[in-house]
Length: 136
Image 1 (cartoon, rainbow, N blue to C red):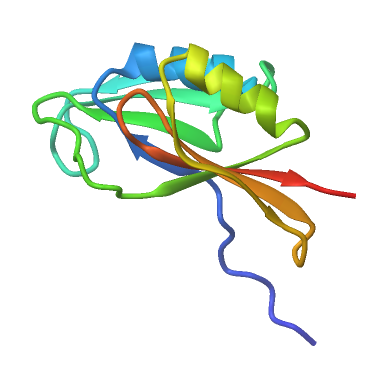
Image 2 (image 1 turned 135 degrees about the vertical axis):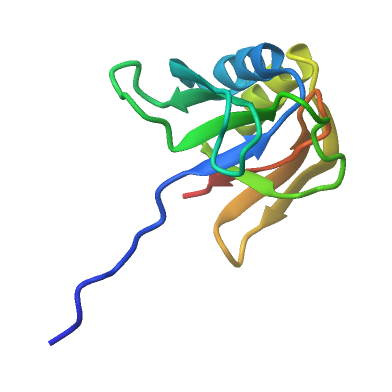
């Protein structure tokens, strides 16, 4: 008999510089909703932080995607993570990203062996997002 899982993947936190701008971008481009905001003067590592929870449903309480800001230091500038989003219309999401201040990092690439098309986009602060469209 298989052992019960001790843990499961639960959420991703993206460290950003401008919480509100980035929340607006991710909500507009990926149909997410702001469902909560939290400011803690002494966060888990003793520094003041602020977070915005983003969810697919406006009724969700906690986000699987959280925008995170260290209040007393700048956000990192390296590609610290790659966010993955699935879409049914790759071109439409790329256009939303462009209108929201994002930019194309790699054009659409067909990957018929996987049954997908993929593109890479940079959000307004330079965070890399991989967009995947399933093909029939």
